[in-house]
Length: 154
Image (cartoon, rainbow, N blue to C red; front, side):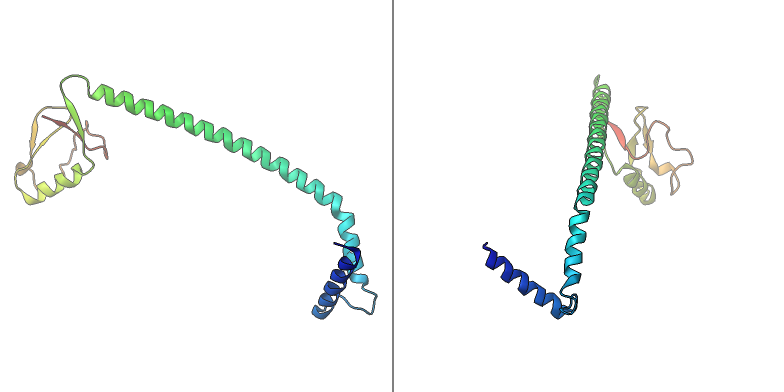
């Protein structure tokens, strides 16, 4: 941009600010000159503030990356645990079946009274639902973990 173009833009914007009532011609546009001087004076302080904010963000990023690494290690440990548990359960000639809706199926069989048979995980005996009144028994089998719904397939 040439000097004339810059001067034309400056005059155009001064007139726009004057229309909006932000500055006046009466004081020789002293308001805009004061604002420019204030910006020049605070430039160094703003630069320092940005530098400090940048250092803060670097610290936060480093902390987040450390947390990410910690949680990734935790996930790997969990996956190794699950793999080990699956290998342990599948040893021998017994296979385990995971069913998420066993409590629901159990309650439906109890209320229907159709004498359904369930195989409990720890014992290889069946549980006859026809001899149980509607509702869950007072003592649930301790070998089944709540929410896991594991049964042995025969």
